[in-house]
Length: 414
Image (cartoon, rainbow, N blue to C red):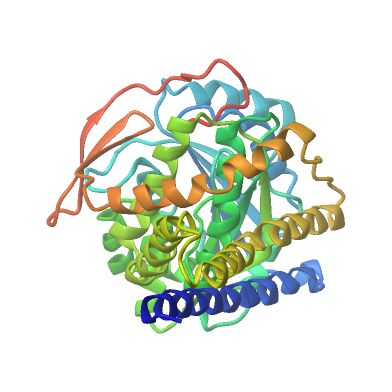
């Protein structure tokens, strides 16, 4: 076999081995999801925070589920962006209906200039922590917790060498659209990579209250764009580790357009690039894999090559191993939710039909998103425009009133 063929096939074998290592670690992590939880009396006091700017499509269900948590020593603080925020009326209505005594509603008074609105809310909610509080957890307005999710986060912090933990999301849109199926597949690729590199998700996350009492930590957070990457980096810099809690996988049923999906994926990667110490490893992994899958389509279109059969076979081996993470993750989510009395809706026939067309889209869009993160100097997210530089890293340059731009109740607010 000619040398170019040997090099290409050897390279794809190497990438396949990396994917196998990532997948095996992912499977080991998922198997930890069904460990029995300790009795209620063994959980430390926790403060759970929900920061809101705009009324997410699933805000009511998110809040109802948070208030229904079975965590034994739980205080909840809800921070709404402003008095005029559309989320405020909905939150007040739900709180009046449910009459939960352990909930405190706050309005964000001072928006910090060099961090995101969510970070400002998180810092405001933790400015005066209860003396007995040992764990701070926070979720997003589209996070639909199961009753024991906060217990599972706390259990992940039982090891003193772990400084922060998180669950993750699993997308299963209710409708059959190319954009929805593409984001579902993208997420199926993303979760194993996040698990491999220790990247946490701020939509369902927890850390130690002692860090939030640390003035240096609060200063670092106040000068960061996003909290999950910043806290992960802080934890590792202090010699501790982060952990993905597989039992805290949350189902997300939002729909999304293809354009909004691309902006969403780019923003997710940008938050890692700007604030996470593991970005170089993640970028190296994604760029090599994405570029290989894209550019090796060229020799596959040349069946006259001497080594075409071997190369094509190796290409499908690499793709097959990469795609295997998706059914493994989906079956895990079904088992986790079934163990908690919830059912995952079936993937519809129309969605299955879209799968072949959507299979290659996440790879090409992820490659574009990754490259795009190096050119972002301004970004608008939920009506706030941020400018990025070296010092300061992030500055708010404009704030517009937030509105619901989608007509339907299931479309992502991005």
